[in-house]
Amino acid sequence: MIVDLSVPLSEDTPVYPDDPGVNIRLWAVIDRDGYYMNVLKMGEHSGTHVDAPAHFVPGGKTIDEMPLERFAGRGMVVDVRGGEGPVRLDEIPDEGYFDRIVLFLTGGRELSPEVALFLVAEGVRAVGTDSMSIGDDAVHRILLSEEVPVFENLTNLEVLLGKDFTFVAFPLKIEGGSGSPVRAVAFVE
Image (cartoon, rainbow, N blue to C red; front, top):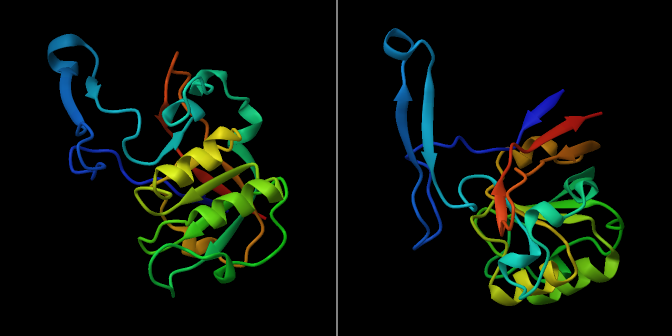
């Protein structure tokens, strides 16, 4: 079974405050031009997307410099919807993170810096969230300075609770990009 973890990308897609909105304009139609095509205008962090180190770390790797291995691997979902405020360390399991892509089902919460530090120390491959942002600037810097990609605006994570799955979400190869939209999916075993 393949589970789609990406939000639809349209002009109605919510964006982070002060980010550019998504603009989709018709470019060509079959009756007039012989083919159909749209023009897209949006920020790199629109819809379901991944942050590269360069997004918060001066001199950090851009999206086209990141190894592809960081965008696919064994995944796990951690459900922290029951709490309030930033996700605390005592709300998450204390093991099983090494080389995993850890996805947080938050219901709108953000990670705390202590959780980000713990995940880096545990050797995660990547981190993701159903929220528009994984956390504040400190959380981004902690993860991205260690070249841990950050996936944001994921959906359907509740379907994966308690399941073994492989997560895959490759970015566009944007030269010098601080991030990229992705089509995130889970292959459930």
